Length: 295
Ligand SMILES: Nc1ncnc2c1ncn2[C@@H]1O[C@H](COP(=O)(O)OP(=O)(O)OP(=O)(O)O)[C@@H](O)[C@H]1O
Ligand SMILES: [Zn+2]
Image 1 (cartoon, rainbow, N blue to C red):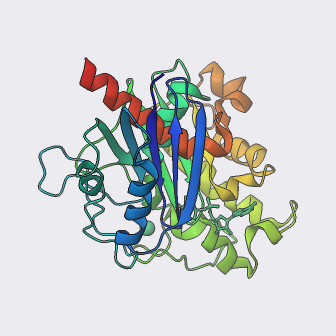
Image 2: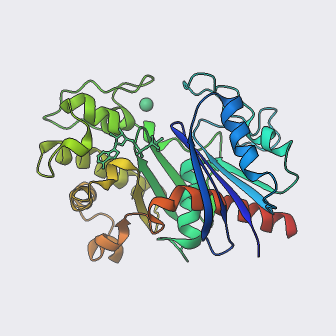
C-alpha cells in the first residue's frame, strides 16, 4: 500500500499524518506551531522510520512555489515571529529522499476536495478557509493555480456593508476581506468570539455579506464548478444559507447556470472531507508528486 506523508503546516498548529491513495488518514498527530527549528524537527521525527513513499506539505504563507526560484520551498514574508524566510521544504528534503508536493494550505485543501471530496470528478473548485485568516485555494482546468506567486484572494477589497463602521484589522490593508471577515475581525467588531454569538445575531448577516460578495466575484472571475467553505468560522452552519442568498443577490441572475439558479445548496458547500480537509489536501499534494515522479 502506498503511504503518503501529509503535513498541514498552520500558523497555529502543525498536523502530520499518513494517508493512503484513497485519501484515508490512518494516523495523525498535532502540535502547536512554535519556533521553526523545534516545530519542523517534530515533523521530521514523526516521519522517521514510517516508510513514506512521498510527502505533501500544505503550508501557511506566503510561500515560494516558483520552481527554479532560489527560495523555492520557503515560507517568505509572514509576520509570524521567527518564520519569515524559513526553508520548510528544504528541511524535509534533507531528511527524506522521496517525492514532495508543496503548496499553500488552501490550494492543498482544494486539491484534496477535487481528488476525494466535494469536488471529486470536477475540473475546478474554490476552497475558502475562514479562520484566523481567510485564504482561497484555486483549482482550475484540473490543476492548482500558480502564477506570480499564488492566489491571495483573502486580501481583496470588499464593498463595505452600509451598517458597518468597523475599521478592519488586516495589518497590510485594514479593511480587506480578511480584515473584515476573519475570526479575529468578528471578535473585534462585536467584542465576543464567533462561537459566543447566537445564530440570530446581526454579526452573521454582515459576515455573509462580505463572504457572499467575495464568492460572487470569484464565481465571475474563475467560474468554479464548486465552492467549498471551511475553517473555524464556517462551523456556524447558519452562515451557509445567508451566504448563498448573498451570492445570488450579487450575481442578480447574470450567471444563469443550473448550479446557481436551481441548486445553490449543492454548489456552495462545506468540505466533503470535513475536519480532515487540510490534512487530506496535503496527502493529495504528496500523491500528485508521487504520480508525477513515477510518470
Ligand atoms: N465554532 C466557531 N464559531 C465561530 N468562530 C469560530 C469557531 N471556531 C473557531 N472560530 C474562530 O475561527 C478562528 C480560528 O480559526 P480556525 O479554527 O480555522 O483555526 P486556524 O487554523 O488558526 O485558522 P487559519 O486556517 O486561518 O490558520 C478564531 O478567530 C475563532 O474565534
Ligand atoms: Zn489584507
